Image 1 (cartoon, rainbow over the protein chains, first blue to last red):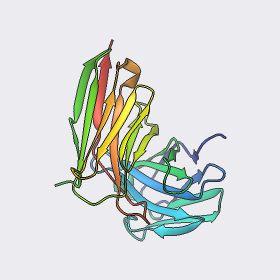
Image 2 (image 1 turned 120 degrees about the vertical axis):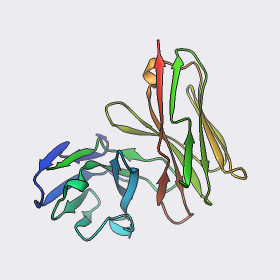
Image 3 (image 1 turned 180 degrees about the horizontal axis):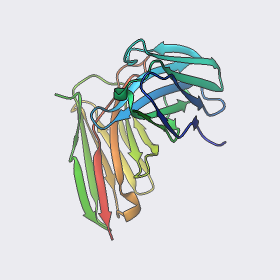
Length: 113
Length: 110
């Protein structure tokens, strides 16, 4: 298995533009998580899915952020419109159940200018 | 006060030394995770603990639920162990909302 695959690795966009981050979890994993990492706040959980259903989105900062998981092999995190304070590294992770560790993707470094 | 506190924030060691990183938390948890973040940014899940002790190679993780404390030990440290080590706690049995510590930056010199 190639692990959790995120794209793009780097994204630079102008303020106000729509940004879409993508994630392909490990086949067979039933949980998918989106995290954000900044220098100021460290790692934060944004949202997670179980069997493609969003379970907890309390970490999503505001309505500009949305996440979908249309099937077991794909998820997106969308920011519209983007703002400079959204600049961060966004990680996707997946797991099989809640009693095992996670596998993280390599992250997407987002810079909003 | 953060719900998850790690100490020390920064740690330097000579190759071969025994390393201990501590994590204390103030909330009820169902599990605790130790993560390793390499200088390139990638994150690896090292351990998930709900009680006792786990060992993997030169890494040992322990947890004391009553004292709300966990430790990560590295025996015979090596420069390739240089990374940020992050403690994270899972709040409840039916949720995987994690709260993260701020990390311990470890540098091991040859």
